[in-house]
Amino acid sequence: MNLVEKVSIITGGGSGIGRATAIALAQQGSKVCIVGRTSSKLTDVLNEIKLNKGEAIAITADITDYQAIEKVVEKVSNTWGRIDILVNNAGANIKNRGLLETSPEEMQNLVDINLVGTMFFTKAVLPTMVSQNSGTIINVSSNSAIWPSLMGGVAYSAAKAGVNNFTEFLNDELQHTLVRACSISPGEVVTPILDNRRVKPNKAGMDKMCMPEDIAETILLVVGQPSRTMVTDIVVTPTLTRDTSSEVIKRLGQK
Image (cartoon, rainbow, N blue to C red; front, side, top):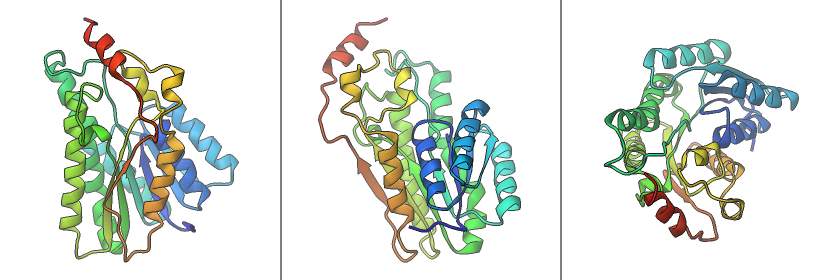
């Protein structure tokens, strides 16, 4: 794969899937803009990319703030003159996951981060991609969008289902262009989001999960397709089934 002269934006680029994806795209020659809320994490990724002779910039921004997103897109366009790949990866979850225990404010926040931010960033980059008549948008969703449960939680699952629906809508709206969108729905992945579970999986459990690099490889598969071909939806799950019943029982027993 040769992504030289291609320009990528990755949200949530400071850790987990975003970090692995930014590094993988840079290794393939893409110029990379990593976006996130924690500047120290972005700096770590930026230094790693540059250490390996990659070209990258890092921008601290809140993806739920449309004006902030517009400034990111403007900065990338002014720096490199184009935008070829957008990976909407930023996401969050909370310890309260049942409907009765999740506050309205928590619900709103999760929908804003996991769904609205994806819609906002896509809207901001689309004029550039449409004018180029080329571009790939990757929306990182979740297995929880397809199989909602207490493990994912009410607001997270609903928001990610919205991401999948939004991706389908994009491909319908853009069907007469060479701009394409794909939703990737991973199962359990060893990322910092696991820290926001009331019952964090033990090491034996995490050993059965996917790694961030696995999802990054899936993203490379999608962006590497020729412009005449699009992959619209991918589900990625661990090969081994993990017994989560004890975690759910413990979680339900906690107040």
